[in-house]
Length: 97
Image (cartoon, rainbow, N blue to C red; front, side, top):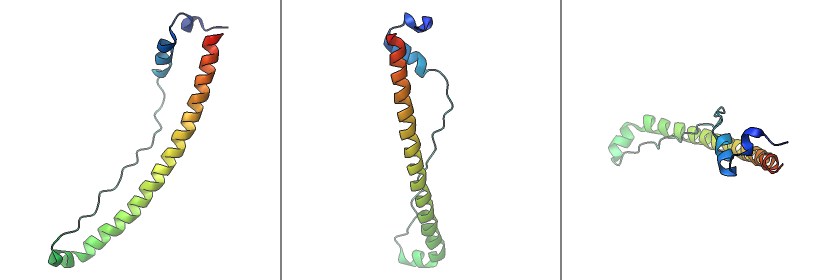
């Protein structure tokens, strides 16, 4: 049985209508860390060596977390895309009835 509300809509308008239905946004926000500053002046580099070393170590930890976040978001996005493809297949079946 056809949905009477979608029956008279052209397919493109029906898709737009379904896309506009509010849904919680679950996408992760993966923010890349800023590159650590490395002064060109060797005297300044020696003077601030402990701070600069710490900045580089923090960056290495943060970039690893960033890569894990990207991997997680990629997996989530692939799963969502699979589900959306299935939903679209069901939608096409509904509008063909």
